[in-house]
Length: 308
Image (cartoon, rainbow, N blue to C red; front, side):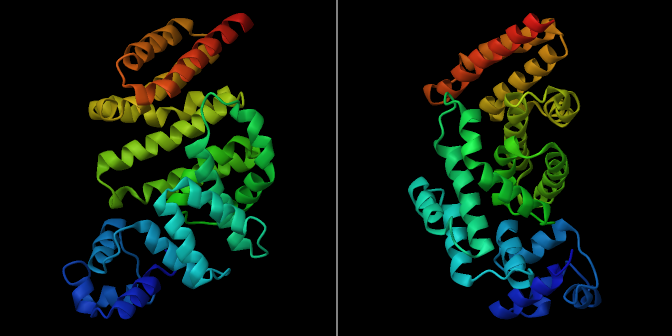
């Protein structure tokens, strides 16, 4: 965890905390001393406790600070603060204004932030009945830029974790597989910073974006293995099904398409029946997206039946 201890030390000193106030009951005095010199590691649960005492309640904020202080590409303070406000603010109009302001900036980091914000904007404003695949090539240059940047970043923030599943739809296959592993490994680091069900729901949602991208782009062969993570999570926790029924419907959709791609049409129809039953019980706000996926679900089954 390069520079983690050094970053904690800088935050501690900037905020005027004594070492004892931060580490007592978490690390021994000698371990804390070595940690702040990056000579000792801590667990992520220990790091969360330490950051809580420093009034840093988001791993994102910590990673942002660490990267801005110690990255080889320094981020100007004003740009960093503006970008963070946009990502956490989730206001589409401000996101688009930020994108327009920095998309042609000569600074690599500014352009990268602009593209990340643009993906966040697209996720929240595109209608699912739009022909998303036909729109993606318009942004190929941006997504390729993000692909290359992500390949060079070891530790991702939540903004990057949220951008990857959608941007990956037009990544090249080699990069996609590498970055998919990065995505899963980085997301696991956030486990200690969320209540478990919150972490699982967010993880499931982003994985589903990725799997739906595979379906849109016709990469069905990966679904058989990649969906196993979600299979285990739903089998071991019934609460996940009830807590976010839209996520669960999209999971049933991906499972059904997986079955159809393997020519198991009995299983595919069973998934479709479950999807339809839950879908019909949901409120109006969730119906438009699920109406679209029900139609798409039926199309996928018919397509594989026609090819068999």
